[in-house]
Length: 191
Image 1: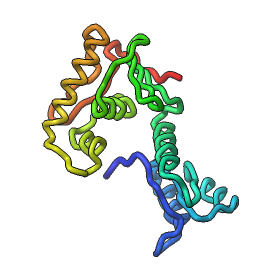
Image 2 (image 1 turned 90 degrees about the horizontal axis):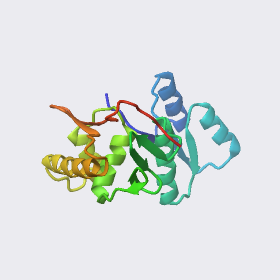
Image 3 (image 1 turned 180 degrees about the vertical axis):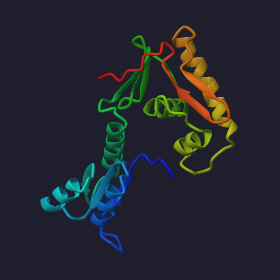
Image 4 (image 1 turned 180 degrees about the horizontal axis):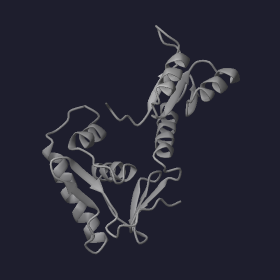
């Protein structure tokens, strides 16, 4: 079916409790990380949710910046990136600072180029479709034509090639999309 990065689950649902939903997800072997949102700040509720397989628990009210930060942290950990830096060959993507470096030198990217490289890095070795990029970049709001993804990839490849003496990190998977790979063939995740 669909491969979601995270499930944000409120415990106060109209038809059944969030605990039941969480339990059903884990019984069905759904591995997607779950972040619980609840107005219940009682320790027992937190322990119960985490015991049922939740990955994090936030109490209401909360600040949206904290929610976004927690979502990013849970997703990063679930993808095997407990650190905020992902290294692919000479390429170093810092998820916290939102920067890219090659051999210690900063690679200047536009916001959209960075977002695309971040998504490719988080899903390193996985083919990403143009639709996935559009959803990541625009979230279903005022989406441009799919062709814009080819334009962004072309610009991103040129900048990365210039910074890495011609190395090609982004491969085209014809008819499917794009994938990030270490041109030397050595895949690593660094602290």
